[in-house]
Length: 125
Image (cartoon, one colour):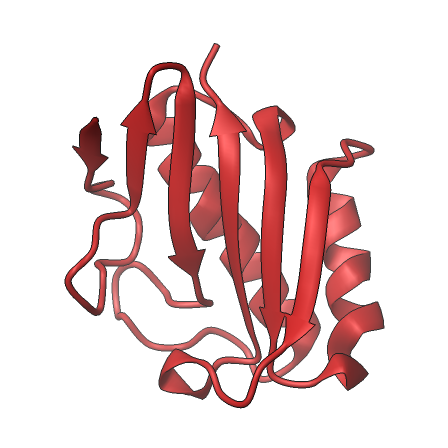
């Protein structure tokens, strides 16, 4: 196993790394909509926050040597299911037709009161 600390992604806000690489798989920690430079939340809408989350995931995957279209599974955590349609629209646009397996759940609260957090598993090829 190799721990990944992506230099251009927002720093972890707890005792974890951005991802673990094992064999040809990347197991990525959840990303919230943090600006990597300021470590502040980006956006007040679900659309803005989802876009930043996807950018953060793309940054982590890039440092590992893979891309969004190599994601095989995501788990999406929403502050409220009322945001599902807005999140889903941006998520789908970012993945450009790629449709990994996915679970989406509503949670009571997310770190820094974010509206969305997404984790993923990707293939490295």
